[in-house]
Image 1 (spheres, rainbow, N blue to C red):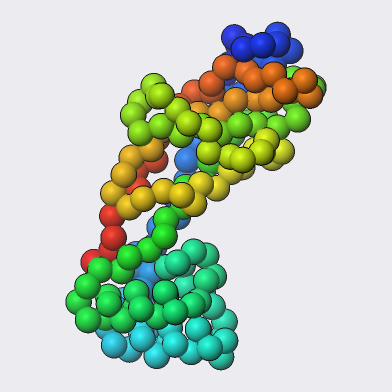
Image 2 (cartoon, one colour):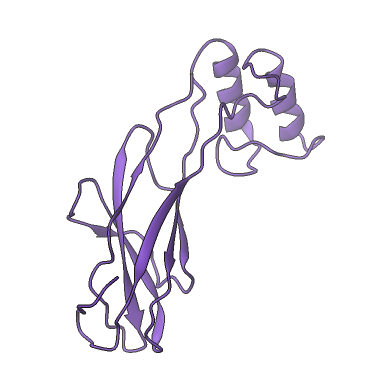
Length: 167
């Protein structure tokens, strides 16, 4: 819970920053037979053509395109299932009445330095960071922003470990 502020004393509380990572056992197993093999390739192609609903999460949620077909082909031939990863952040809303949103900050080590990752103030208490790389660890913090564009201090930090490519 935040008690100190940067810029304005009305921003009192922002707590509970939490991280949920989207992962799957093996996202290239499109036919759900617990194996990534040449049987998954026709499923990728049919999803790409729109003949089956797209349920892949390889190049992003529900994205079925040439990239997905190529990644499934590579995995079926013994390579890795290269996926785009995301980190979903959630937090408890500030108790201040004049908060208009939040800024999200990411660093690559505990305690920062941090860089703001959102392009505009986030009006909700959820943010998805889709610009993460497999095999890296990220540290996140958030600030509350009031209607005068003043920011609170950083929230508590949460860490996300991004899995590497799936074999």
